[in-house]
Length: 624
Image (tube, rainbow, N blue to C red; front, side):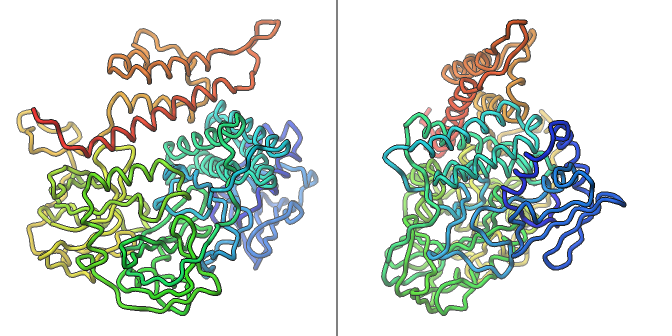
């Protein structure tokens, strides 16, 4: 993706692709990457791309977004139905509906502003939109008693486009397939099927990142997004659900609140949204969040910590609030306890509280078992439906070592934990801070973290603070996304030098119990998840190859006593190979519904089993 190109409306790309003759559509996927390296010139709202000496594509972006097909022109003779125009547009980021252009000075959305349809949701349940944090600019809560004719047709269109992408995989789903998905999302949005539309946009965005070689793209994120998209559309088309989602957050009056800042963390969504979410507690210890999430990348998220909170008369930044407090009158909040910033809201700066003081200290008093149950239950619901802070863990840990990537820690109750970065972006401080903490063996600290639902005993630290009696040189606590820790700020102790693991592995003669290994996936569940992801990456054809003399994946799952997973995988392979033939014996395309349903069942089981295993890893070990 060329970051210099302005965002475009989805309809602009759809019109450009559908206007191409069939012979040029076949060349579009080769032209897009070739045009991605071209220089982009800018003159105000006018962007130009010189394809060659005689051909120039011009984009007009009033307000920072290309909103009409007529705003994109090409000087070649085939314009507007030319390959140059469609190829350039295929590399541009797609803007969410009803959203302003990315801007450093764009204020946070309030209850008077349409919510961004980020799919929450969708959002990849965290991975559904690959958000670093649980915030999302869309509220998915509206529903209808039953779908009308037009909404049902829109849902069917989304389903067909999603099934086509799943069948073709990343390699077989180029710009044409992505445009079909975006068109379906546009129709769903127009008929008020917001949640399905948002889920389709998430998949389209991640598909573009996959084919464009985005360094931060993860196949697991696309798999989660595809699972959410198929789940939502399947539930709607079969009548199992009537949840359509809403275009605006629904806010209600909360009255007066006295808030104490807790921590702030970065938000990165696969839909191209970025920003910051700050958590604060009221006198009763209930958590609330203030979000500033808009279109942008990791750089916007990195700047978000120093952005001023758009609420009342306060001049506090998000980082400043975590070390202070607020007195809010006329407060409004969504059902997820996200505070609004409407015109009637008044807020002034007040004193804060440390993590060892009430009401914040009470967050660490909750038993760990109850916290884990609450957090995993929250991670199982769409992002927009989660109560603020419900997916957070408040832990007392001691650092025990590092392998250079992950950090071993031990909870106060003796539970071993693996700490991993919440987001591996150079603009954010997670990686650097975790490396500093990992070298300080024996360091005791309080931690706000989020459990990783896909890895047993693994958490993603968001903020840390010294435990009682630990002489840190930090101002209260450190938000790992924004604050940069240095060894001089930690208590005087012998820092462990980072030693990369030998390529050949540890010496068997010296390997002992004290050699730490990060928590890993269950091999059987990892095998099942690999088959699910393999299908998303390579498409239906990946399941049609014979295994040869080696045992099949289903056989290996049965040997691991994963009978249900093996049965589902057998059904998936059978559905992938069940292709009708025409009168001449040649393979003919089916609608792919049976295959998509089989994949959805397998993916849902693999996700649920992984979450259950990760939650169970927190339980105390049974006595021998």
